[in-house]
Length: 425
Image (cartoon, rainbow, N blue to C red; front, side, top):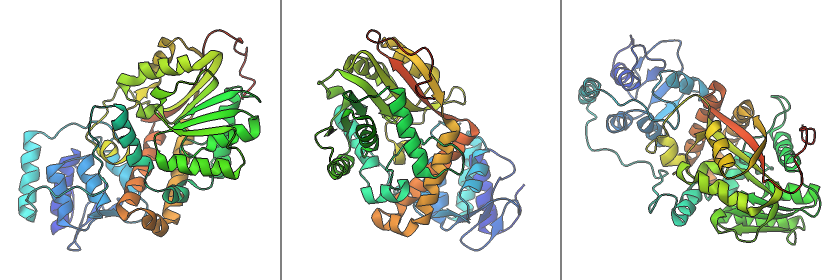
């Protein structure tokens, strides 16, 4: 049972209904200064009645996230503790559909809202909420979805990611490894798994700001084609190649992977890109990359996956509306099935779940250390979106709900695969 009086006690009752729990896992402080909930629990601050109105209209993850992004709901200190406590209630797994409220729960929530005087029309969502239109996974809609996430400012990403400008899971020798060193280790691991050597031609699908292309061309002497749907990423990647004297060796394009027609390539890297493709499109994605490989060429597919059992992606939740519109995840078995179904032979699978949790926590630290500059580079709401999604994702990787896997495959023909993985371990 919750303890306390004033607005906080009634908000606590409403939140307990939304979470489907009898004992609230956090302590609440309301706009009137009242507090309620377990005294030793992480503190959540409700700054405005509007936060509760959002919960009435969108009970669950989306309503809470909107209130946080808008600054109507906040945490006192560490973001991880209250989010972990709320997630433990079972209705707030990031990216997944939660059980809807029962009619009785909805009625109880409305009664609480009436007592607090917060009933009214739904507040408009924060400006950072994304809406993409058109046929799902059409080229135009995919470009808009990617732009909504990656074209929020290179300066903002530089503050979060650091000098490496790598926006995918690093590979850590130890938890106290420097993030930039861990990202450099990941880039080199990808190159070694692909068996890169001077004179080879590499396709980097979803090349981001060009970090893998830069590493592969500099250290392995390969020619690279990098494709992205983000104009801001491409502009910075081209600038980096020019500064490194690599413009003749690295071709950065704003191009959909479905439009690439100048294969074959000796190797293909797809790092953090398959999550944007969509489940229905994954067979075609695997087939297209197969066709772009020369016989004997290798593809490394690095992608986040569900690892906590069967789940249903929520197309109407916080991640879909604020972070990765139209993004979808599958489990490792399904991803391997798509790759094998396209005629590719699996050479190696490496799970990097713990590595991504470390990476996300490092990004959150950098964001928090540079908070004022990050807000100035984009908006406070956008910075709040990134802080919330990265912290929530770190907890999901730590809990085993999410995983991330590097699947190395080869197109049959050409050189035989190695007998052991000694080339890259």
